[in-house]
Length: 488
Image (tube, rainbow, N blue to C red; front, side):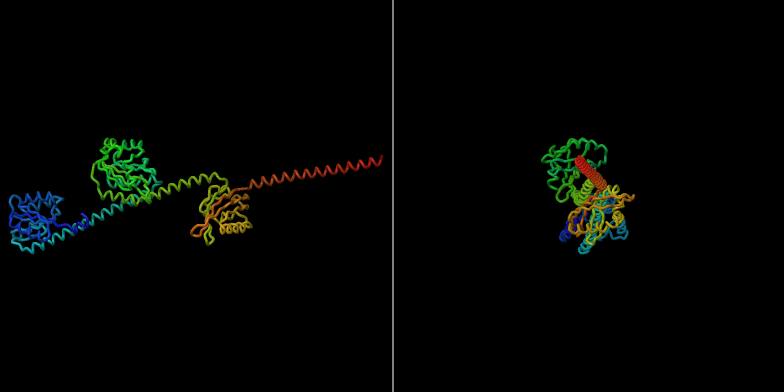
């Protein structure tokens, strides 16, 4: 019963009296006042009428054949299903003990015959009002319990997602949480391709009984969806689907119908997990008992899937980011020198966001130390080179143009090295300038270049010496020739 029906329903009153005139009078009176009225002329008929439909209020005579009113009331109060039905005794017995007994066995009011019409209407209205208020309170309690169950389930699944390592483990964790909370027997999830024509069975699953392992094992061989396939229809409609008994469904709707029959799985609830109108995965839950759709359960699980879609997508993005970072770190480790990313804020503050392991080989500082102690890293520059370095950095950051600098550094062990630093700059929306670059040790190149230049100089010197010696010899030879000729 929802809140609207509480305020619009017509109270059902059962009149129990062996006096037909009393029944007729009370029935007419209450019907004219807007109540639905049923009548019983003895206790046995009253109990049967209550089994057929539970009334909202009973007006009960005491002195009746076969079963008196006291016994009828006692039987009602002895059973949980009928104990809450309000009972007003209406009797010609006017002794105090009779009234006390009526209240002791569970009666809520007592009207003495002959009765006044207005008195009966007032007392009936009072008990009906109390009954409605009680039902409203119970309804609100049920709503709070249901809301609390939703919040509790959301909390536990959110925690499970936050603690999961990746997208798949997050799906598995939430699947298990939901299965346990709703009390179903088996759960799995499927990952669709973009056309919802091929599905991959997720690695995670839940089973209340290990006997369902056969269902899981043989499900791995399935991948392609037919046009009417349950998973495909869920993906195309973006809506949950409830199947009362999958074991009797046609094979093109549920390919595992025979397998479900073998392991005893019947009712199936499939729920899509969406993000930005894209189906990330499909939860599929099974239970052994065939049952009709439960709108509240469907709403609960679907609402949970909707709220978790963004969280699972975030976890999916985190997994992709971690994989990208892993690949980048592996790539950076194979690049000579040090790869880094930094940021220059509008106020001039500089911060290193990432630096590869090559920094340790370059300066002797670990990446963690270099990022935490930027001044220590910059201190590897000679004091007379720091000013030039800063000026080039500021100018490039302001112009957002690539820069290449060559400068000496002194590593942690005192070795002097020459470094070539190449960086590119990009302006962010908040005014920050992102710096991406690579610094490599060019000391060996410079030494080789210097050695080459030295050897070339030596060869030139030898050539010059040879030329000089040759010139001297020629001059000497010419002089001798002149002397001989003169002597002759």
